[in-house]
Image 1 (cartoon, rainbow, N blue to C red):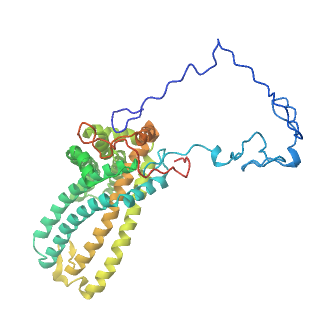
Image 2 (image 1 turned 90 degrees about the vertical axis):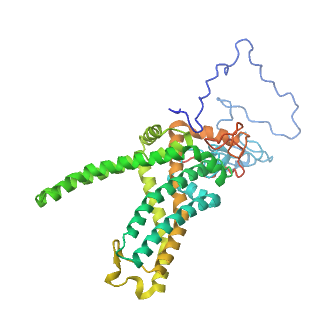
Image 3 (image 1 turned 180 degrees about the vertical axis):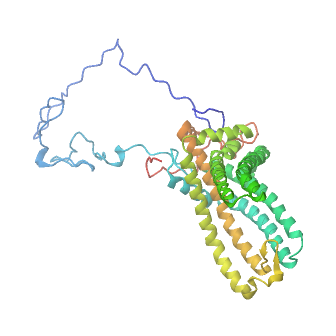
Length: 435
């Protein structure tokens, strides 16, 4: 049960039925005896045992029941042990737990870590047009600003312009990343139900919350910076006051403690953005919502997020390293100029190397940006499934006929993926798994 209204809130459980027992007025009908005459040559059935079965008797012709397989036929071709022709035996797939529905990129049940990662990769692969398109725009804008600052620094090492352009990129790039993260959240939410996703319906659903997403990011950033500033303050004060080296070394302890607290807070608030976008919450309500969802699963949330970041870093290295080697081979001895080419940020790179490295960084960002966003959204969905039974509502939404264009009947943008028949529904073949 949810503690706040929002995206696909689970419904109330079905009350127990009181009329499930037999009626007191209508006694059950007595069993009808089999009056059909036996066929000629047929062997009479064995006498029932003390519990209604042929206890202690052997099957005809010495055939034993096959545990875990199909029932073996007897001498007259009929299945043994009361089975019907073609019925699965004990341990066959028909006797296991029912398979979880999988209308989209994940099965609708609590997810294992591998299923979270697989769902993120499947989202990027299956919905590559909106995901790669959004990431490409952000990556190009980021690299244009950073490459322009590096080129300017190479041409004029002592100019102040590269510094200004670099700080401008530090402000603009996160805002573009927020826009991409908000739109990608809507794409992933539709991918969970197997619904088609485009930039148009993602923008229509995310637009009302984008300003709140900016405010949420600013507040989260200020909280983390404030904690780190308090932790670093003793070291700065002791360093400026020419204190003893031992005291300066001891001031490292508050800094390490502040780093631990900052990481703890970042994980606690890591699910606020999906809650804000998908539940149409306010900024502070989304922060509180994230804290409640992460409660009891901090280490799991931290581990999955860290694993996703490591995988994204490896993918980025796979793209960037070849372009680095190509750039070094093309530029040759001009990779680092003489001492006069050193600007405010170290050795200035030649323009050819800047261009080649930027191409590699853009290609890497087209994969890593949607991948990390998808992992974050799927973590949010998994926590709601585990705490609130969101999988029931998602399965109901996936099986309810409705429009699939992301717009409800009143014409307002949908706050959540609409209920509609999935176009690529495939049953989960792995069976229920634990976390």
